[in-house]
Length: 387
Ligand SMILES: Cc1ncc(COP(=O)(O)O)c(C=O)c1O
Image (cartoon, rainbow, N blue to C red; front, side):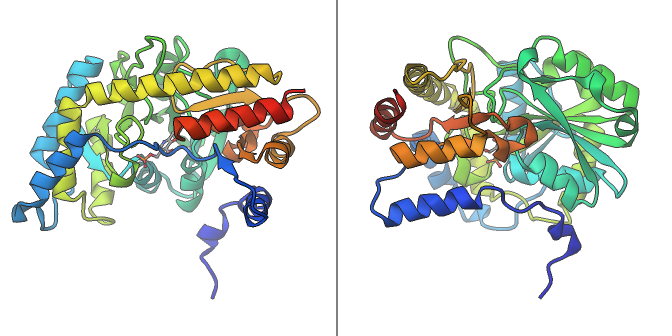
């Protein structure tokens, strides 16, 4: 059996060796604590469960859903965007639900890219920004996020040839994996670039509802001109502990939304109606739940950053996301440092290079583990790596 050449273009998984070491430790009886995965550990808000239970009891929700999405959900997204971001959206033409941001981002590549085209991908970044273009038969062109620019890419450094073949640009703030919030002026600069080079900006807003220290994350669409050149993918996964529910929406430029929808009607049959109604309830009444989650992550962030400083790691506390991104100490690369941390403390942290070449020299800690396990992990880091 031979997989497609398309699938063979995806690079091999670089951290198989680290995973093998984790498995060996566990087999040897070590109580390994993983701070590797970003998957919220606390339950989905009760209001989502209640809305889902009521909706699923109605047989009217059991048939094929419409790929356009229920009017209730599209209206709830529009009301949320108006209330939360000051962005007015037309529910009929500027909003389509997606089965998670991952599905949406992947399919945008299929919808917009042909062989010979390119997508500009924030790097380090969510792997679908580079894997998606490859599977679509096109090319990813990485835009290194520069720590000294607040993890903004330098758009002026994009080569002339890449500007011409680029049709998409992926940005994501608050950012996975760096935890950076959008640097001043970047959205404006991206809009100008998109106009000049006929590029569709795709802003991945997966973490806008998880922010700290009073910071409020904006929507890309609140920047003047954004709607003419861009769309935003808003996910309920992280902000409302709904990763398993596969709930997101793509909003913004009506022409781009129409193209995505046209592709989507050929690929899936939409989001379960009962889940759509639960997602609508969360968008209408979930602000407090999101705030409580942010407060929890803020406390965990402080715990982790204090511990990292105590072992000599020079970390900048993030103002958003569920991650802490920190430089590896001198004398190590990302993978060798993560292996040492595992070896000496039984704690798994992710090598920055897993998120793209520009992640080399960093490691990522996820805050989605229970308080007592996180406290234990932190204590182990202090005692085994402290000296
Ligand atoms: C930046 C970013 N975008 C998208 C996703 C996927 O989100 P969803 O669960 O909505 O598919 C993640 C998940 O980790 C992410 O970090």
